[in-house]
Structures are given as C-alpha cells and as structure tokens.
Length: 591
Image (cartoon, rainbow, N blue to C red; front, side):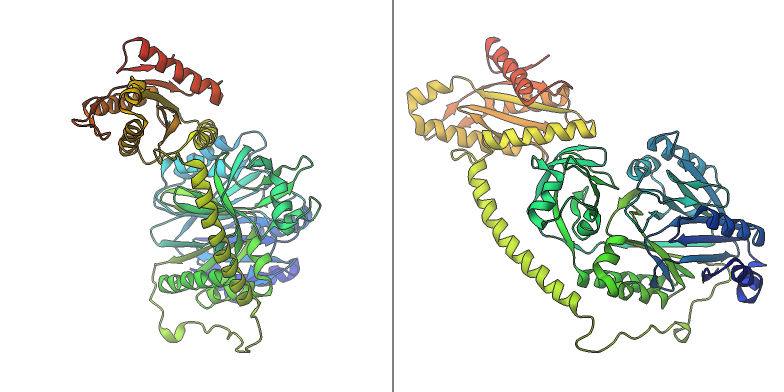
C-alpha cells in the first residue's frame, strides 16, 4: 500500500498529478485506489467536476468525499482548501455502499447498511463511514449497525461546515447526500487496520440530570431550560454565536462505563438546545472543558501505539472542538503522526469509533486510524523512519496550554472541595436519620428519574411497598427505642437483599419502598417473597430478651404507560392493603 496526499489547485494540475510522477507508477499495478476528498467548499458544480475527472482518470478508484470544518494534510491543519488522499492498494479490494435518509428512518438505514456490508464479501478488514450528522441521527444508525456485534473495526466522521448552516454533504462521483451516509468496506486478508481514540476533557460542574429530552433536543436540565444552564454558568447568550461559544463546554456523560462528550449545536427560541449526537432523558452529566495537556499526552500514547503498528497511511477524524480549543497548537497533536506515515483527514461534527463490538458516536474526540497491507512487506528500519519537525524550545512560546491546565486543576480541586461539602449536606437531607437509608424525599427523586429512564429506554420497572405487621404493638409494648432498633435492623437486611442497581428507602413510619429498575412483576414477586421469608425466620434483637419474631406484608406494582408517581405508588399501596386484608405475611401484586 502507498498513500499520496494532494492539495487541489485546478483540474489541469490534478490531471498532471494523476498521470505523471510517482503516483501514476503505483496506480498502474493497483488492485484498487481509495480516493478521499475533504472539501471546505460545498460547491456542487466544482465537486462534480473533480469527481467526474477522477472517475475518468482512475477507473479502479473508489471515490468518497465530505465537506469539512478544517482539512488535514501531512498532519497539519489547512483552512478553506480541498484535500485529496489517494490510497493505492496492491491486494485489498474496496466496496462502497451508501444510503439516503430522505425516505427511510435511521434504524432502517442501519439495517440496510449492515445487509450491504454483509453481502460485500468475506474477510472484512474494516469499514469507514461518512455521514451528515447535522441532518441524520447517526447514533440510531450506529446502534442498528451494532446489533450484529461486528468483528471488524468501524471508524469515520460526520460532515462539517464552516458556517452555522446545516449545509454539509457527503458524496461520491454519482451521488451527493445532504441527509445520508456513505461507507467504504475494506476487503482482504492482507489489509490490517488499527484504530485508537482519545478525549481529554475534564469535568468542571457538579453532576446534573437531563430531565426532559426529545430526540437530540434537550428541553430541561434539573428542571431549568437547557439554554439557561449555559447562560447561568458561562454567561453565553442565545444568539448566532451560541455554537462557537459552547464548543469548549460539552456535556460529559458516563454511559456503560465509557465517557462520552455531547456538544450542543443550536439554541432554539424556546431555550431548548439541540445536539448532533444522541441524548437520553434521565442521564446524569457534568459540563466539561478540554485539558490541552491531557489531550497532547493521550495523543502521544496513541502515536507510540501507531509507531509499533507501522501503518502505510494514517487517517485522522478530529472534532471541531479540539481545533477550537487548541487553536495554533492543534498541529502539535496531529503532526507527530506524519512522522510515522502520510497523514490526512478532516475536522468533524462527530466521530465514529467501534469498541467491544459497539459503534459509538463521539464528540470532542480524535479518532486515529492506521492502515497497512502486509503483502510483500518488510518491517521498517530505524533509519527509514521519518524525523519529526522539532518543537521550539523557547521557554515563552506555546505555553498558554500549560496555563490552562494549571487553571483547570485549580478549578477541579476547588469544585471537588465544594462538591464534597455539598454531598455531605445532600446526604443529610436525603438520608433517614433513624435507619440511615434513603428518606421519602430522596425516593421521590429516584422515582422521577427511573420512570423517565424506563420510558426512554423502553425497559420495565417495578416497585415494592411493604411494612411490618403489628409494628404499633412493638412500640406500645416495648417502647419507641425498641421500635427504632427493629427498623434499623430491618434496613440492614433490606440493603443486603437488593441488587446493585436497586433502591430502598423508608417511605414513612414502618413503611418501606423498594424501586427495581429493569424488573418485571414476576421477578419483583420473587424478590418480595425472598424478603418476606427472610424476615419471617429472622429473630430481631431490639434490646428485648429472647428477641422478637416479626412478619411483613408486601405490595408489588409494575410501571404502566399511563402511570404517574402518584398512581404507581397508589397501586402498590393498595396491593399492600390487600395483603393485610388477606391475613398479613404475604405478597400481593397489583393489577
């Protein structure tokens, strides 16, 4: 494999580049040629002219292109240019598929793409995807693609645009999509692809909750308007510069053990904010800010990994957030990859990266892709490796990132101290003083959040309401101190009975509530019966000689589509009352 990178000047210059010189020599013996076009200009006539000429000059070429918000050539940022990357393969075959989302939804688009990928041939080495993320919910497409647990790497990026319009496109020599995707499939046992990614963002704010979201639009955060969050904490206005002002301050979300950044693209007149990536109602997040020092350190680790891999070409898919944050230092992150192999790419509106068989839509990250062919290949000798351009040793140059890193550390420590104090105050307000488990106020908040998550993720959820049978007699006979000891002992039993993702708290008096996410009625009844039996056979100390034998009654209710917190708890409470009427020490499920 051999890679060539060319900055477009004119059709005549392009023709000369392809017909003469080193590229012409290599392409004559090629199995296939991947031609990628990264264009700052969304000028259809010009792009058609370029792709048409390339199709005529290189019949074996597979052409794909995207508009950008910054072009990368030889590991350096260029602006307002058209960059062409020519990857010449000796043995690797390429197949291109595309999908227009004007007439089908994103889930169907993902299913169509996976069928096309599956039918492309054996020995898939990897898949590159380019998409118009401003007009397509790419997360839904990628989720649909991930259903088959793909065994090969998937990577790529979302088309960018220099202004605040949504006029980004992806294209080939025959089609141009304002709402669609294009994929290139790499086929062959001689092709090897290595992908790496890094984020480098730190959290700044306290944890908050997305309390109302529709698709990629966030309407409420902790019950304030989405835009008001940025206005309150960062003094950002709802005007034409909103996107440029929030680029450095994404939502940082922990999802399935993976940190994702989500950058708002647009603030609507109703003060809701729109994203180019998926947002889930009920998720918790913090506002983040990029740490340049961490970014550069993580990129250096990726560079070392790529150096060991020894690729023939490197592609970079970097979020516009990084370019905006690093400014003139952005080349310090990218240029070292050019020391390994010819490096090209573009600045994106969203990056695609597969990990653990799942394709993730990222923001604020950089995805680094190394590609090589092993056919007839020899490992590089040390003297064949390129020498990187030296970074200045001027003590006073390029030091603003270090200052930012120190300020970020200061803010993080200060925020941590404040949050620790706040957590203590919150704990005091959320914990029942007697049993030291959640109180009614905390349980109300958990119910709101878990019901929203259950509906957003289309999962089942159940609650168990129960109390101690004849608890009043314990207080009357032995006193309230004994009664409190019984409640404490019961709370400890309940905490040891629930799963890690379940919740339990004191609803009031001798009543307790268990909240069971991702649980149906049958499973909840099983847990309730286990709790009932454990209490029935347990001897409570209570400070009473010989101990106390107690029983409990339990009511189970599963969340229905029309339920509110009040109606869900009401059904559980009625089931509990029915258990009492039945004779106590039993479990009843609500209708």
